[in-house]
Image 1 (cartoon, one colour):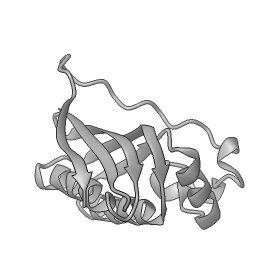
Image 2: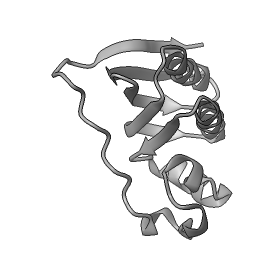
Image 3: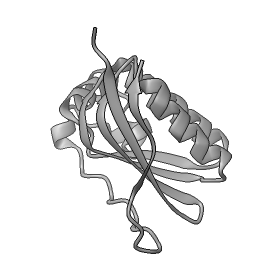
Length: 141
């Protein structure tokens, strides 16, 4: 039996959050990530930057959670952007053409391959130097 592990870290700066994810995003761990993103909205956050540098795998359930969170963020008058997606998610974004929703690419300029995409702007630094604290992590069963 396989158990996914995903760590979710959050830093806030007024109405902006930087979410750092580490581990695998799949059917088992996507609800954890989805809850963390929903909590941002319920806390009044309207700009959510998600750094995926330390994500080793992301499947379609992860994409679905990101698209759902982006939709809810847009409905709340905000924006959600992904940064440094792993190759598995990059391939899914490329195949589905959904990079413009999550990577901040202009609608008419979705690249044929993510290798052609400009790098998204780096997330804003937090307003104070506070170490990241795990807000949600562990084995998801």
